[in-house]
Length: 276
Image (cartoon, rainbow, N blue to C red; front, side):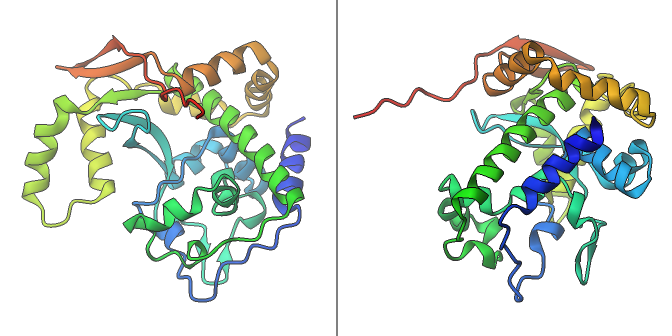
């Protein structure tokens, strides 16, 4: 089942794929910590099978927990499993794991073209060095449909991965109580990077026990039996529907209160768009 699932994704990934990185690109997305690439446990399992490397080893060497601003409210932070930067799989000749790289790498930048987000991304300072965003990208209808299917699969995988690791599909933290600590820390160093931000917040959260037992959970996926058990949850339509709904409309926000995380009821969701 697992191999068939990944083979289907691999077939979708190459469907009418004509996207080539421009020759003048120095792989900024693979190098820059400011460009966040979320990875799921399914991405790690795909790499594990292809490279014959334990999932736990891939997690330790290629990932870290980090944060990004919550799209629904800039005051809040979303906790994510991020790809380590610069990416260890980047070689002079290109991506070492091209055929089985994380889905979010596969989707960029073509998916952003078909949902009409490319022009907006191109305006952001962090993407100034991306030649692939400078002009419109040609994406065929068949390619567009394949990417949309991959995106749908990616969202399901992310929701289940977060739930498996953290017990909730969208772990959101109120950044306001941490603002003073961040300000004091940033004043002590000349250059305050996204990695510094992640490290500081992770240190603040360590005493809460949030990350206790994470490695034990990930190590379970080093065995074929546990991999298959994890995969079987993707077929639980009721579970996946519930996780996707909670990921899109979070109802719990955590606030750091001493050495514990205090859950607070908050209904975060995009405002309804009314047609004229």
